[in-house]
Picture (cartoon, rainbow, N blue to C red):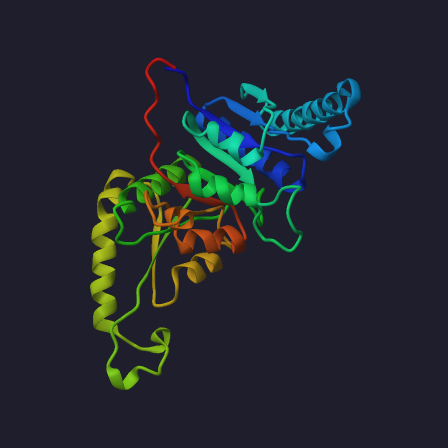
Length: 295
């Protein structure tokens, strides 16, 4: 069984360059190899007139140059990391997803070369974030930040323990503080139905929710006693609170659902909104798939 790699997708854009640096530092921290991937496709309209294969040769040279530049960027921030490079031919999202079965982590920038400039998240990054079988980090906002706390959102889903485990491991490996955020909508009297829930004072319900949060976090505090932990309980939406926390955090961690009626439901609305609006990298925590023993 081979060692899992940290995979980073690159296309030479500023966003992907930040992703390469983030991935290289993470591979170094985990003592794992870094695998740089640039999937390239061609314009079939132009390829029809490619006499002698010059167009394909040019495309391959461009792909090799993109990965070579990424190699230099990774080596600059992590000189001791083992680096492998691949330039598969095909659609970027589809090719990157093939690497996620055996990856420790997939890292991508939030925007690629294609699509519309007004989009906050590129289609490749969104598809990989939603469909990958391994954890994914989308590097956005302050992508090169290496200090500050780690923020994590938790709820009552079955994924909560895995999300907390990911967060505590990340905090202890970086000697960072951890901010655990939980939001809920309180039950309010009918005569207050026109008042926003965020403006209603519900101390008894808040005490109950805080006790539930403390109970959820207690085993992880005990396992990681050296991690400084703060908790935030809010009536606001999880996406809004986590987006606010992202302005001072190294990165934000959210969970991923394992099923859904539509693809985006596998990530959830909170995670999807953060991928579009967070001011720091977003870490989507999901369990690693089992490796084929023969690989």
